[in-house]
Structures are given as structure tokens and as C-alpha cells.
Image (cartoon, rainbow, N blue to C red; front, side):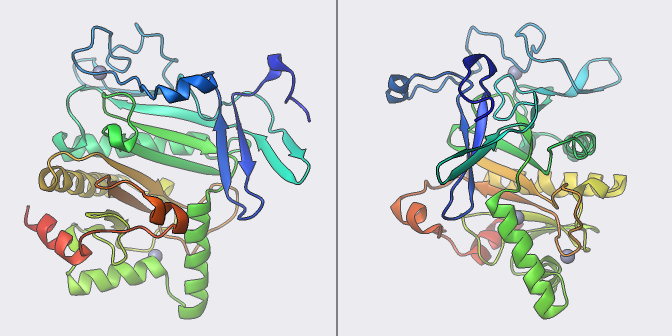
Length: 339
Ligand SMILES: [Zn+2]
Ligand SMILES: [Zn+2]
Ligand SMILES: [Zn+2]
């Protein structure tokens, strides 16, 4: 088992495969928590009135990693910056070692983990203007393009957590990027589903959804020339919203400037509507796009899913993977549209 037992070479994280389902899990021990510490469950959240300096307002003073991207405004202050996560779920050192233990199989958690930070500590996405959100999208794309051809990077997940219930451990608004060697089971399900729908219907499943939603207007909450924002027919969470290109687009990284401005607008307006409707709920949003593993995915269609955290997964959801949404998406859409 190369690189496993020797403490000096100990990797921070490893990927382990569930041999029944093929799903991957990450075992991340970088923060060196002892077993008894789990009982305390005290997550450190950097609050606004804390004496401590906010990591993301003062990245230099709090010893964050060096920037990999910085956008400056006309006053020479920064407006957005990206740096490697201090506590990476995936770290970029070394080769990917594969290892086995009897019937089991795993590999090192090699990859990249970055944080994308906007300037203002108090302005969450709902409070930014559309162009500032477009700048965030621009940074996502910039980092995506830089990392997509790196060795061992086969999928890049970009996501944003807002609020404690959504897993945000730092109050200062930020997104995260994980460039990883495996394709997640969720994305794999979408890729397979899109391909089999195309084989049967000779049409993209996401384009089919977009066309239906545009012509019926029951679940659309916002649209501009290139994007729709809508509550999906089979929403998994109350007030779930997807932002999706109207035309068939498999690759997020190929988006042009005008599209970035428009997706910025659609994302900002969707998040703002959710913010107002649910009074600043915790939420996650994330990007789903074609893998960057060197293969073509002509039948996939990139999109952003926004999931307000209005309920927690209980026994039924955990045991079945079937989520329970407590409002009809049509009713949620009607409400969001009016805001
Ligand atoms: Zn801050
Ligand atoms: Zn499509
Ligand atoms: Zn998706």
C-alpha cells in the first residue's frame, strides 16, 4: 500500500469507493480531529463581532495561501480574489496512489481546493449587483480553464454555501472550487440520464425541459435572452431553482462575455428572490457541467442548481434518496416570480 502507513507521507485525504454502488466518499483527516472531539460538535464560525480578524477580509494577516487570481477595481483595492483553501479536502501534492484492502478500493485525494472570495464581508450574493455576480462567474470560469487540463483533474465542482445550515464555516461570502480525479455519482447520474434520453428521443433532455418551461411559463421565475431560472418539475427541495442556458450548451467553460453577464443577472435575481421570499435562508448553489476528463459530452447541458436549506434530511430521505419537498414547485414559482 504505497504512501499509506508511513506518517511522514500521510496524505491529508483519500477517496474510498463503495463497492456496492460504485459511489465515492472522501475521508479527510487534515484537521486532525480526535475521536472524542466529535462529541462536542462545536463548529467554529467566524462571526462579525468576533475579536478575531476575518480570514477573508484580511487574507494576508491571517496567513491564507497566496492568491491564484485577483481582480482589482479602479481604486486599486481588490474586488475578488481566489486562493487555495487552508484546509483542503483535496490537496495537490503528489501522484495518485491507488490502494486496495481486501475487497475494497481507494485512492489518494489528489486535486485542488480553492476559495473564491468577494470583497465585502456583509454583502452576500443577494445584495450584490448583477455585474458583481457576473464577475464571480468570470472568476469561476477563469479558474476552471486554468485547472481543467491539469493532471488527475477529471471533474471540477464549483459551489457556494450560505448560512450555517448550508455548511458555511466562515461568514464572509465565498464560493469554493474542487478539482478532483473522479466524477461524482450525482453528475454521473445526470450524464447517463442525458445520454439515454438523447438516444431515445434524439433531443437533449435539458433543452426539452427549457422549451417546455418557456412555452408554459408555469415554473419560470425569471428569463433573459440566454437563460431561464425556474423551479424544476421534480424539485427536491422547497423553492429549489435552476438557472440554465436556453440554448444547448454542454460546456460551462466555453461561455462568452455576454452570456456571463446574463447568467450573473439570472443567478443574482434568483438568489435575491429566495432571500426575500424565505427571509435570508441558508442555501447552497452549485454548477453542473461536463467533466474535463478528455471525453466529449455532446448530450449534457450545463446548469446551476440552487437549493434552499428549508428542511433537514431525515430517515426517509437518507434511506431512500427520495427527497420530500413540502410545496408544489408551481406554487413556489408563482410566489418567487411576483417578488
Ligand atoms: Zn470578512
Ligand atoms: Zn440541451
Ligand atoms: Zn444538475
